[in-house]
Length: 258
Image: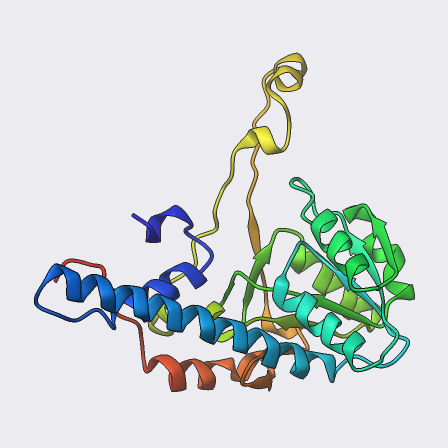
């Protein structure tokens, strides 16, 4: 049930794998204690991983850089915040990220970190890339071929960044690696409620239209300069080596019936 709540973001099934693979015991109390202990250890590991990732990503940013962000990613923020902690002057151009405007969260947290922020509408991204030194995005899943599955609009931004010669990196902890893609599994793209895009009254007034609201898109590895993790930075095409090191040749589902 937990696994099926979010079909695209792989961090949830990876968290379930970590916790449930450590569930052992012959009575309910022992099983419960093992699950709680594993969940606490997993949370602690995540906290350390984000700090390590931030320091790796910060090394790609130079003093005086302006970065562009898309959607809201605590991993991407960790890179910018670590750069600021290193004494670098960083400013940001933040895309609003329709339809849920997660960019507003990013803008607020960057301001709290002392980063000057310019908020723009999504369709203005290409214009402002001329004023940007680096694009930093997160990921909901990363496939074995280095494809980055992230908030809808990431792929278009990556293509524009490549055309403009602006380097773009994905900041993502290894919990975002999608081990099932090692065996040919494709990542399902979540479709969200049309009411996020248009309110029912306006939709009715327009007339008979279809509304689609994909939450994510896939950025091919050729448009991404680097994937930054707590284990270091990798060219997208080589992320499969890290995935095999962490997960072997595939991934079991410990919650599934045998």
